[in-house]
Amino acid sequence: MTETTRHQTTRMRHETRRRTLTIATIEPLGTHMRRIVFTAPELHDFVSAAFDDHIKLFFPDASGEKVMRDFTPRRFDTAAKTLTIDFALHDSGPATQWAASAEVGDTLDIAGPRGSTVVPDDFDWYVLIGDESALPAIGRRTEELRAGVPVITLAVVDGADDEQTFATDAAWTGHWVHRDGGTDADLLLGALQGLTLPEGEGFVWIAAETSVAKALRTHIVETLGHRREWTKAAGYWTNGLADAADKSLDG
Image (cartoon, rainbow, N blue to C red):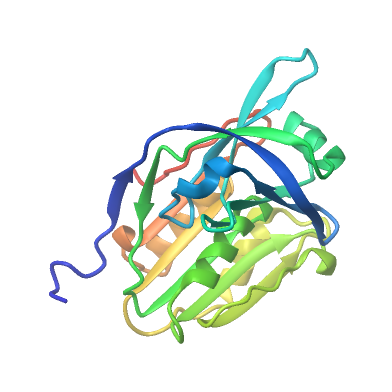
């Protein structure tokens, strides 16, 4: 692999299709998340090429109308025709209400993903940072990385019951911080100050509340001196605004 082709992201477009899925299984992930496995014949050709892809899920709101929310495909199996989505149960919006009361056999419509930005698995190491909204992408990336590559994850959750374990062949080191009344920005920045980035060429991925993600990116790039083109930050939600996200803060 030449220097000009190393570390090149690839952008892909996909056919945007709407699919109706049926819940096959439900399991708790700690206190504040639910893992729901869906099945449908239409999943035989489902495509999600990047760990941080987003699909649209359609939920009924209080008036009976459908509202859309973005979720990460946690894992999928086209042969088995299954799709796994992890739901955080923190707020009182339509997605949380639906997921909290969902039962096996219930149906849900999805669409997408519209496209993927594929970060190659050719870096010397990876650092993945975020809150609960980022955990599906963090877990998926950690599990999909090549065997032996160092990956450090740093996530803020409410408590020890909300920590997760990822089944991976990568050399994974997981760091968890608990809120205990602290702000996400202060907690994650404080934890970052205690971390030393590995030697070599690495990729840093960040997703959290928009202002938190911006602060973390600034620290990684300006304080730690990590290359901006090897840093990807996204605001998965914005405090005080429903369905407000900035999937790329790198412009």
